[in-house]
Image (cartoon, rainbow, N blue to C red; front, side, top):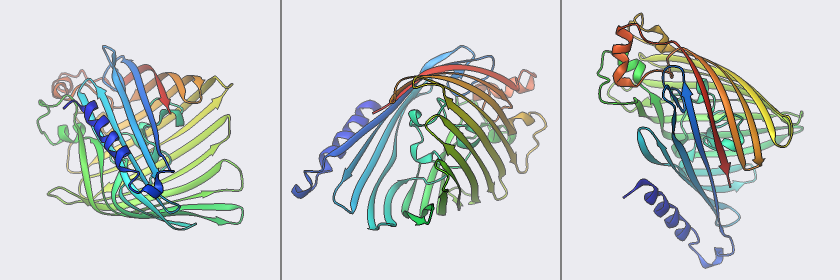
Length: 373
């Protein structure tokens, strides 16, 4: 069955099942969606939507359904389909029930949005952030956070005078995407059977939380996120991630920065973060710039043949035209130093490095459209 057909069937099944009781039929199922299409071309290496030949095949579409069953209970689901040069993927982003125990306390159970940093709960909604993709030094496939956790959590917010504290606590397990090519190369494993080495990494026995403080200065907030758990693999190493965030938003100005540090015992250490600024020149035009830096250190390997596989440093600029508040066209330029994310196709990597043809600087030009409804 084609992936898009599966997505439609899943959406229809949720919509039919949601109004389970006649007393709830007055409360309709809310249906929302968002999508992205982008074209990218690089001088060297593959990065984000770009390849040296130019690539127009990257597109995504997600459908989000919510059902308010009664004053205390709500059901939330989202499925996403993505297509690029490697094929088509359908994923369940989240599916969970939320029960309000009190004004300041809600219980969440199922596959729940991951409360980590600023954007994990709206990961693919391009109309909510300035660039086509989120900053890779924090949100890229490195292992900081995924879209959801599977388990049980509580969330709420508390007014503290002129301040507001929003919190999340949860336990269970999570899965996230990680670009494994650099570690596979350093360990001498074969890279011949994969155009890309994005793997789904699972962590069990996860305990985590997030706390965000909204200040008396309207639009200014800061906070922190953290979780720890055991990798679902033979080595069963512990993964621990901590992160901090600060942001300031007005109708015209966006200023944000996030920093994360991850340690996998006897495996790797990663530190990465970014700073971003965007300004709305008018209702139609917006400009933005961001800088990101990430360093990945792998244990027990010799990186001297290609130390650039452990680093990512990026400067990027964007000009956006908003046709409406739910449709935006973005044109971007990215300058990348390092090969943690920007590299040739995996099967070519060993030959490229051995012959001294690995380019450590990548220029990317990309443009595309994003929408939401």
